Length: 143
Image (cartoon, rainbow, N blue to C red; front, top):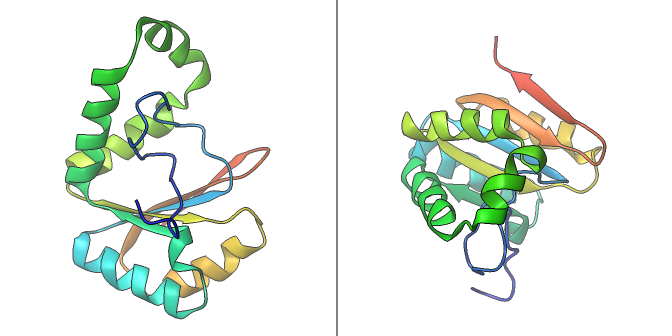
C-alpha cells in the first residue's frame, strides 16, 4: 500500500485487523456502477477532497473482501461480532454489491464536510448514502 493512502474500514490488509463495520467519520456513497463511481471519484478530488481520503470499491471487490473477512474470522469474532457490528448496514452494503453497484468511501472526520461532498455528488447517479458520524449514522436516500 502506498504510504499516502489511508486504510479504509473495508480493507483486508492486516489479518489481525477486523473488517470494521462500525466506521466513524466516513461517508459511503452507493453508485449505479463502476463508470459512475469513477466519475464521482474524479469530481470529489477535483473539488478539493484529498485523493488519499477517497476510495472506490466495485461490487466484486466488496464481495471478495467480505469473503476474505469471513475466512479469517475467528470464533470470538463470530460470537461477539453481532453485538458490535452494524449488521443492517453490512447487509445493505453487501446487497448493493451483489447488484454490482460500487461504493465510494470518503474519510470525512468533520461532519460539516458532508454537505459539500453531497453537493459535488448531486449530478451523479447514486442510490444511497450513509454518513457514519461520531455519535450516529445518517442515511440520505434518493427519492
